[in-house]
Each structure stands twice: as structure tokens, then as C-alpha cells.
Amino acid sequence: MGAIEAVVSRAELRAALVLVNDNVPLADAADPDDWRTDGAAAVLGSMPE
Image 1 (cartoon, rainbow, N blue to C red):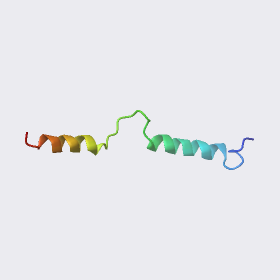
Image 2: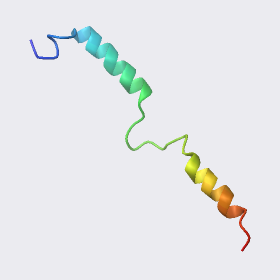
Image 3: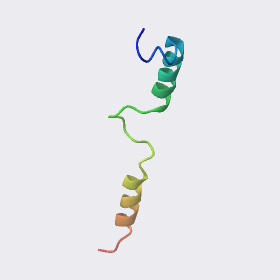
Image 4: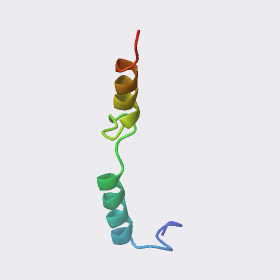
């Protein structure tokens, strides 16, 4: 038995990993909530030249 299995069962660990994988985006995934890009374009587009 490993150190983790001494604290939680394999079933609990699997369930936790499913929860994390379902809720945390991949490291290289695009950020759908990246408001900074849209906000900067709006501000820069409205500035007089």
C-alpha cells in the first residue's frame, strides 16, 4: 500500500482526479474568459489618432 492509499481509497482518488480533470483547463488551452484581449482592443480602437 502506498502513502496516498493509506489516507484515501483508490476509488476516492479516481473520483477526485475526474473532478479535477473536468474543472481545470489544460495548461496550453485558450482562455475563454481572457477579457484583457478584448478590453485592450476596445480601448485602443476608440483612441483618436
